[in-house]
Image (cartoon, rainbow, N blue to C red; front, side):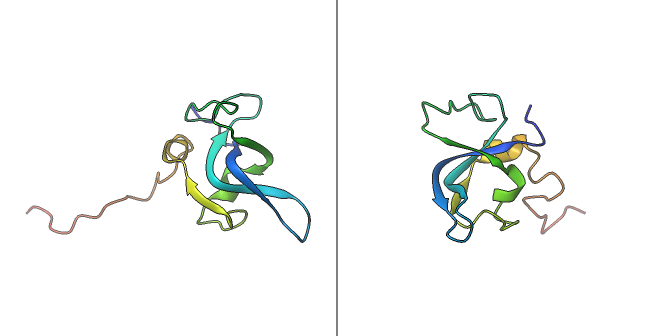
Amino acid sequence: MGARNAAVAAGGQWVDPDDGIRYPAGEVHAWERGRNETVCGLSLSRSRLTRFPHVSWADVQPESGRHAEEVQAVCRRCRAAQGGRRDDRGWTRRNPRP
């Protein structure tokens, strides 16, 4: 079960030229502080993922746009564990039965 206040682990990083803070880039995963694995079960060291304890999971979602500038992919399993698409259906019924 994923934590609601998960931080981020990512395959890459970039540094904001304005404030000099590093942010995640590439594929991002949800990571619980104090653990050595992501919410989806990947080992941080074996997968060579970098931790970003100062960036919350909500800030790297493409919908938020806050720190998601260099994010290329969001882990589907981590997103599901964090409650992604809970209220939004991924499909629509076009021809319902009578």
